[in-house]
Image: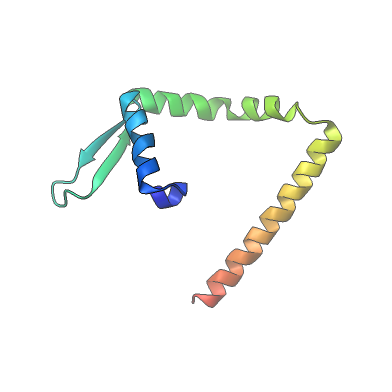
Length: 98
């Protein structure tokens, strides 16, 4: 998980501790291998995730209002260039690692 979030193991522990303290996640240690800790959303965490997902479009629209129409178009153009470069890099990576 730390790797996926690009966080150190210590920073990940701090974030998970906070989420657990807030009642959003729960940790369960594996019976087979005590080094493995399974994470799951609590009911409250699942409800928060559902609410955030439902409001994501509205929140994005509100944030974009800080930019003029021209700035928004420029930003979308730049994001499209980044997306195309990422896809190109992924294809190159896949070809190298076959």
